[in-house]
Each structure stands twice: as C-alpha cells, then as structure tokens.
Length: 326
Image (cartoon, rainbow, N blue to C red; front, side):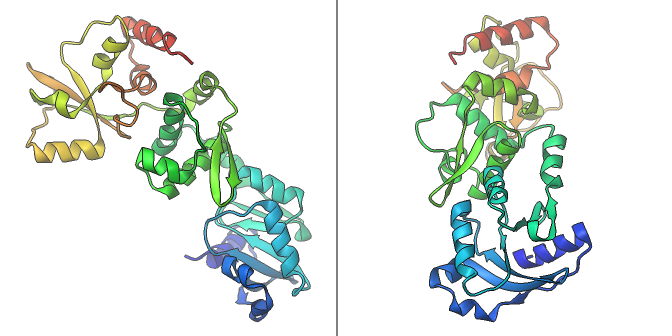
C-alpha cells in the first residue's frame, strides 16, 4: 500500500474522516528539485483545502529544510501544505511541531494545527507497552557495549557489522530512541545514532529491556563441536570467572548457523543430555557477532544465565561483571 493510501486510511481509522487525494496538476510549476523529492496531491479535509507534500523515499529531511520547501511550494499554492513521510525521528517530530509544520506519519502520528489535530497516542503506547527490545535492537545495544565507537553509527554502517538490513536497523534506531536509550539525528541524508549515556549507564538502563538470546537448547554427539560453535553458557562463564567447567560442554549458534550446520554435517539432535553429548544453545542473533577468542561476549552471557537459580552461578556472574572495564 502506498503512502497516500495509508494516509487516507489513517485519517478514516483515527478520525472517521473520509478523504480522497487527487494529483496536483500545478506541481509542474515547482522547481525540479522539489518534484524529485516529493509527490503532490490536493485534498479536502473537513472543508479545508490542503496540499500533501509526500516524500518519495525514506530519506528524512531536516525540519528546517522541510519548512523551506513548504515556503517555496506556497509561492504556487494558496493554502495549507502537509508534509507526509513514512517515519520521522522523535527529535525531528518535536522540531516540526515547534515550527508549526503540518505533517503526518501514517499509522503513527498526525499533526494538523490548522485543524487543531495533534494525535501522538501511538508513540506513547509504544513507550508504555514496550517490555523488551527486538533482537536487532538488542544487537545494536550490545555492539555499542562491546566496542570502542569512534565513528558515526548509521543503519548502513551497522548493516555491514551486524548482518541485518538497513531497514531493520532503521527501525532499531527508532526503538532505541523510543526507549530513551539514545538519540537519532540527521547528518546529510543519513540517520545517525548517538548515546549520551556512559556504557555502564546504558547497560543499567537497558538491562530490564534486554532478554536472553537463547531460544532453544538441544544436545548432540559431536567431537568437533569447538570448531563450529562458540563457547557459551556455563562453559563460557568458567572462562570469565572461577566457576568450574560443566560436565557437558556448551556452545552456541544462531538459528541460521545451526540449521546450516546440522544439515551439512548430518548431526542428530538428542532430546536430553547423554554421556559424551554437547549442549547446543540456539540464539536469536549470531553469538559470533561479539565473541572474543571463540567465547560469547560477557553481556550476552549474563543475559543467558541471569535467571539461573544456582547461587554459585550468580556469584560467578557477579564476578564476571565486576571485571568489566567500563
């Protein structure tokens, strides 16, 4: 469904207002660069004539630039202009509202001050109902915690590192901003994520939103497990603390890595622990992303074991986290 239809549906669903957008024939009078950036549609909302300025792609313009574009359009249009975009960062939404720029993010937010309409409930609901972060968002947080960040964090840069799509990481940026963990700004044509919190502050604040990466546990008989898996679970904790090695070694894979591994090597999963078996943890993201010396990172390891009731495990986790140099 294109953005215009989504906008029409959004008005009807939220305000019970039925509208029909029509292409604006006079758009040819506008500068070429505006027609390259936007599509233009006339619309009648509650007997007020408006012009929709619809972004052609997901690249976000700064609020100052949008306001300038609207001023240029109004040289050829005597009425309200409404900026339509599929997503706008919280920072830019605030700036658009401060500048009294009418805008809509279909399905999320509607700000039409000339009609006294300001719908922002969706963003509040996301913030209130969000209990945990998605795996891709959690991966971004863990990337920041596990690395020295000396460059701008953009969806395209992180897509390379984390093996998620640019679109998925752009949504992760929104989720991080909604959870008040970081800020998203525009630099040129790129969305940029920044953190004002120190690493220890970020970990403390994000902790209640982070979940165990372990999605499944299974067992196999395999003498070559260390070559393919990443040391995890109690095996990993024994590396980072004084905890003794478990009797059954534990290694981790992502879902995709495990599926590929089991098919290529004709491994047979066991329903429970057997003599000589290896415990497999299947993770929601690749344990290799942040591993060091073939051991999963400390933050993910903590999340995978924090609900373990064994007092020795809890003491070892505490010991491991105390050794982190923030």
